[in-house]
Length: 116
Image (cartoon, rainbow, N blue to C red; front, side, top):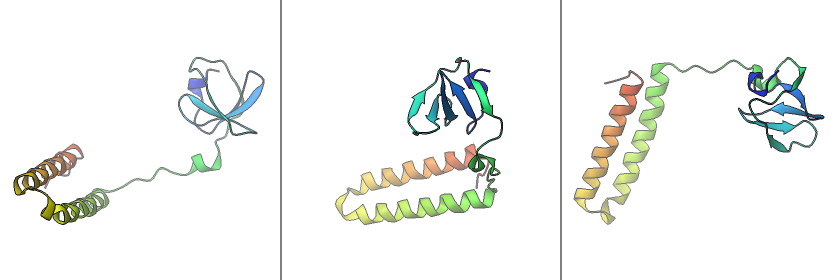
């Protein structure tokens, strides 16, 4: 089997040592935890077909309300920070910051299909 075919969290043997795949190109030594770059094409021997418990957890899905609420909290925090800078920044610069932030907000929501 090739390294690229493994799922993250799978244990395997490579060049006489045992590793656990931790990312697309990196594996952690099973005993020492030392990380090693493993070529995608490297031939490996799978020693464990099941995934580590942490990788078996279901992926979290977010609904549009959660995304919008989280982004609005971020947006409000950023606006509050800009207001605190108000005394030390020229009015035109502050207005430009607000415009850039609003454009970024609209683009973010548009990319997610959550336009106002």
